[in-house]
Image 1: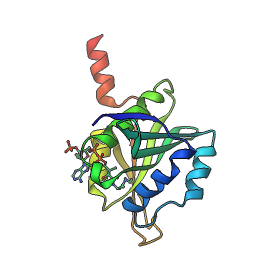
Image 2: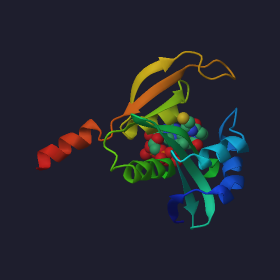
Image 3: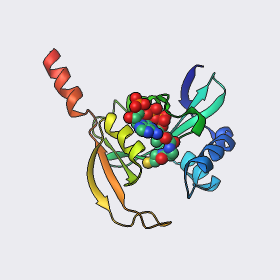
Length: 160
Ligand SMILES: CC(C)(COP(=O)(O)OP(=O)(O)OC[C@H]1O[C@@H](n2cnc3c(N)ncnc32)[C@H](O)[C@@H]1OP(=O)(O)O)[C@@H](O)C(=O)NCCC(=O)NCCS
């Protein structure tokens, strides 16, 4: 199976909704996805198996000082194959010319799998938003990644 990453468009929303409902207790509605896709500040990437079937997506939004990663989900049967990693690495590549902005996100404190994924990609915990999730009042962990993470910066300066 090959995985191709490309920009999402509105024709992908049926697939997005199916993955979203299988991934979250309080899924985004279709109108939330439509609104995101229409924003000039939004970046939405999809991962497609064998160039056709949507199996994962990542939505990010550009703010003054950071890209906010709003939503990342992988269809359950395609998890643990590096697809979320691939999508987020592509997000970093696409936005790499933008040295002024780092990356931030919120994640449920109980979502250890996602926290592990983000840590592997260079995100660090930066704080807690108490009771952020309205369904169960769970806290959110705020994570931050520099535009160029410290490890990459160190490797680059050692190489030059
Ligand atoms: C979290 C999620 C996006 C990960 O997607 P994925 O494609 O399976 O992630 P990857 O295969 O790229 O995993 C990268 C690393 O993250 C960690 N990780 C991801 N899923 C994990 C799991 N189920 N258990 C333990 N570690 C996990 C591992 O360290 C993994 O590396 P490894 O497989 O070499 O050990 C996916 O499980 C998902 O869609 N979950 C539901 C939605 C969600 O919680 N999104 C994040 C909201 S902030």
